[in-house]
Length: 343
Image 1 (cartoon, rainbow, N blue to C red):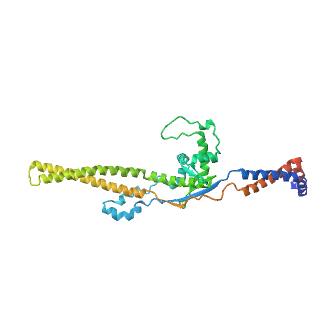
Image 2: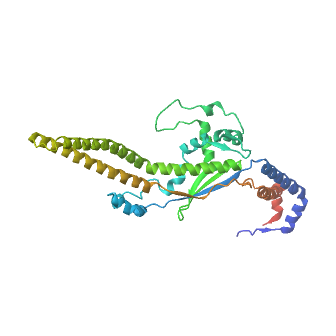
Image 3: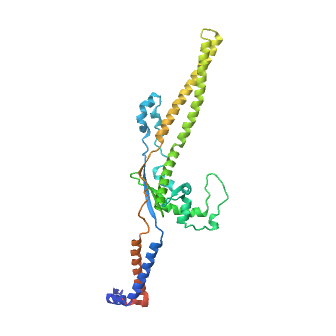
């Protein structure tokens, strides 16, 4: 038969009273350590900015306002709807752009202002404030002597920095509303706001470049071809006019053959030029359609109130932990727990 275990509360209160100074001493010590830490730890300021990206997938409907104008130019917007609205960079992948290595390396180069309005690069600020100007070990600065396209070579110091920055600066997306939130936490409130602003601009520029880079190339290529074919078209047009002026009243077999050849070249160059011009206008419409639009819902604000440390919470948690530790020590001391537990 198992023995029942009960607690003798009289014995418990007697031991607490007897060991009260130990309890007070341990609790006070742990609480003091916690409060000291709360005042010693670096202050952090957190801010965020919000972006609303354009909803995709509407196809040529986005250009319905241009339908009449396009039809006059011989452009069929319906034929352009097949590939539109396909966003290779899905909105749910936008946060990954902000946590990528190229983004953080670009951030190190950008200029920021601290709360005292001093301008410096973000790397200089990070080294002075977050790293407290500590000189890194030589092994942390070593880098592989390799230069190869398509890969990034960084040293151990930057690896540590990037890991820390992923905690300080990141992005998230609300899948219901599509709103992208950029969060930034820095020891300086102005730097926190500026880094969040840089992240928002970087993300918008990245998505616009990705989605329109091929279309820009198409537009430029067609523009070059139009200019080239225009010269040939104008040349054959002038040649046709001159030949007509010279042989207007002359009816020779050789002249008729020459006239037919010039007419054929003129029609071919005219048809080719007009077709290229049509494709060029279609490409410009397509570029306009596929260029994403972003709306900044909430610009980053330099916070006046720090987000960390929360000194009152740290003090209360330290007092609680100190009390638990004090009671644990008292119960173990001199096997006091045996007097409390009656079997």
